[in-house]
Length: 119
Image (cartoon, rainbow, N blue to C red; front, side):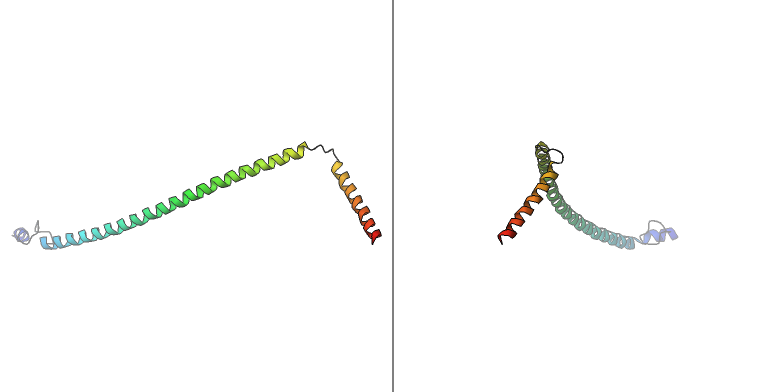
């Protein structure tokens, strides 16, 4: 009898607490909640795709900048090597630079004395 009354009330069995109307209302609420969550997730996906596109553009820009800096570094290294080779090719004997600096100092001294004498 009890089960029969439950079935008449829209319950699949007499032990179930909600009638079909209540179950339908709950299902509609669940569908509405799921649709809202879906819209939020679609918005989030759209935002993330836009952010990804911006980040890719920034990455490409930085990558191009890094290549330019690497090329510049290579060019400067080549310049340094050229200068080293040029310095190494100069026929300077050991102690010659110190002697030239000493001669320069004495020549400057002589020049200063002559300037003082002219004054």
